[in-house]
Length: 593
Image (cartoon, rainbow, N blue to C red):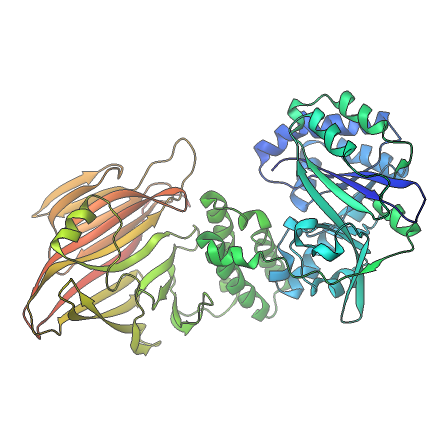
């Protein structure tokens, strides 16, 4: 995350001097990069401000950046307090963990806002008046919350502001009888101080309407003296000020309705963001239903808030995804220890796609089964790790012709009947932990009608998965049944190793220490896939020997391990065949979680 400069240019009234101020975002991303930015930029910036009282800047800190400063450089806030006393800086409020406010529950909104506000007040002695939104994620429903929390204005990027309101800042918007001022932010990327000078000089200082320009700068390449020397020598009609002071003197506001920022589209288009969002909402529902034990509830809510940080949702980053998902599991475990937990399967629309999903809550693992493809699309083991599912999930179904199967063995992606079709519910018994689904489709160029009935029976250690394939056409069916399982990468960094594989064929053991290029093992009766990073093993025991294809794939930009159990199919008209797999999740002994 790069440091941000925001230039706020306003004209309080016609024929008066313009006001300009700057904004720097201190939002936390990781310890390593934040420590580097402190040495390269933040320390130099504060030192420069202390020596140049005429420069005024707006800062934003999230809770993690505050905790980092308190732990590593507590003297930083001592300097900030002096700058505040000199009325040289203003600090914005926001959410403690920088959440995407429109998509979280009202209780979490007010809780995150108040937590950061109290923290800032303890550090600075002042309550913030301006508000910062992660990626300008805006919705009118935030206005009453912000107003009731004592905020008077919010910064929003120009990309979400309708054209008719641009360059008319400050705006004012209302909802349910509450209102808040909005200052427009124009985002311009620059890479040298010459570009910075060019962009600022291009601004029309004679304009009657206010505007905001944001500069994203990498200060590791800049000469502070040159940049701020230029900023100190702005046109004479400009005056450096702070936005709250500017708004106090501003008399003219433009009424405006700002449409909701369409970040919700990202939850639809990003598999990782959508999966994490669904888990976050489910955990929120569990937490809101918890009664009593305030200390445990507070601890669980803190874990939930941490996982609401926008950085976990705004990019295809598997490492951040697993970090947030793991934290949500910790919150769920905290809730479970207090409540009267019983192993169960419940049916409801978990991922909000309009179809009933099946949530399996067992003592040692949790899983979500989708009727689309009749597969497991989320799997967590022992409630300590992230989501082990990747790619097309676990127990995805493929029926392939011989030609398609040859391509499949070369790791070429193939979609066919049953891999992504809708399975109808035949039977669901929550008490017995049984789910039976069925689908029909046409196979090969001959359009042979075939059905697949799939049954999941959950137990404390895993599943029994039964598949019944029936040839419902008048012609013999010849093909290949493939049950595919994709397992996500769970360790990151230079010491990462892929899953190890152990297989048994006719009492002979075969071992692959790290799954790499596609490899086929024949006549297998037992398969164990081991993730050394988490100390977790997944065991497949088919009722009939099968061939196994193991390969490394890439899912959401990161590598994953794919194992495919394969059988030949030769079905006469009207004949059906059954295949069963016992699937177990095992915690390796003598491993620390």
